[in-house]
Image (tube, rainbow over all chains, first blue to last red; front, side):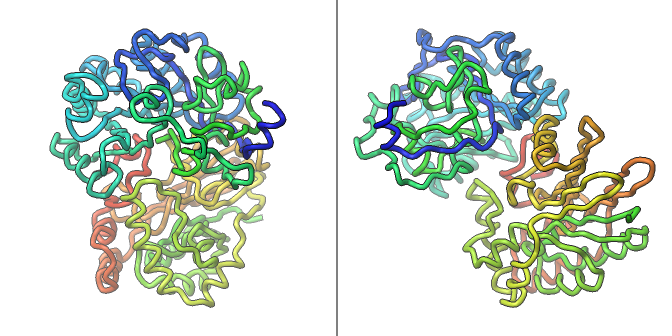
Length: 290
Length: 260
């Protein structure tokens, strides 16, 4: 990072590596959501699939560093044919969460996931991405027919004994309000899910979302004297592994300056919050964790 | 050096359960009693906890409640992230803050945040949430061995005792080390029974950790909670043993184990 840029933004100290993310499916996805902050699609090969061998190498390093929890995202993680063995190995070390669009969750796979969960002393969590309360918003963003198929996946997980967290973006108006949240919870209860779980996620004005709505304004930057809290910011205690190396967080994997090294050890250092997405995390208190 | 100690987790103003737990522990031969903080919240009449602590000489450290109350903070800093959890947490905190005297709040400020002692040849460290954060939730299913080992190394301890989650567990670590979440005496551990739990530690040839269930006057507590107009959801937890609020913070496994 150049001297002049360092002078124009705050830096977040590194506390300890608690959360390790894997871009397990790279930027490959069966969908091409119009708000995706890394513009994943069936043809985006910016970041490739992670093999079991690669994940295993990082898990070994993570074990030595005392990592607390593991997250798997993409792209669509279930497009990685080795995902289940990857989860099995991970669950020997600690809790794991998978972020998915829910379209690959047939009954057989749900049963396998439940077997993995029951076979570990650690939690296995699934997070299903949904936009809006129905097909109107969801299918417009994610493609025709996806809402009903995603919700069918949610239902199959529940039937198999897993209780996924519905992860909704703030795209639909009023989602984050108490009544907006309650509408989601009511919808899940209506499906027979008696313990509905929900997380609302902010949108980042990056990737496809930059084209769908707008990018960041020039003033949406952190000033050098902004007081940042490393306990609140995920870059203070998390890192993201992709096929291109280790990045500071799940959001900035398309930003060359956010690549911090090849091994985890190389990345255990402060990070300069020089990017507009850092503004969103700081101002809105965003964490990609559940 | 004592051969048996009892450690209590969050009291949550449940002075009846605390008293019963102290008596039970003394009867079982505990030589010292400890409490890991969060004296208030959830239950009625927060000030009724203090005489119980005093009469049984319970050595107490600060929980996030004591930290927040003594600093006149606007909320409990419990560390919840979901609005549903925070809604009920705020009701608890506002009630406790209203019913805790200025003198008691000053006393809370004098409590240590952590406590170290030698027990069973081990370096014991007591903290509320974790040694690094007063409101860190250490759940069984999300506190893996490598992570806890790192924590013990960083804080130079062989036995870490914490609370904050309300669910008790023990995890053995390589090198004859342990982490024990002592649970809470303030409310039952989301198991459909009304007993609350504390941890009884015995130093024999090796360390023995026992989680002891304690029956107490739960119906009386529920009655007093209703008199104080505390939420019926809280009352139901005391009467049924199932958690009804602050559930969103639970990891998948712990959530699956409860009714709600």
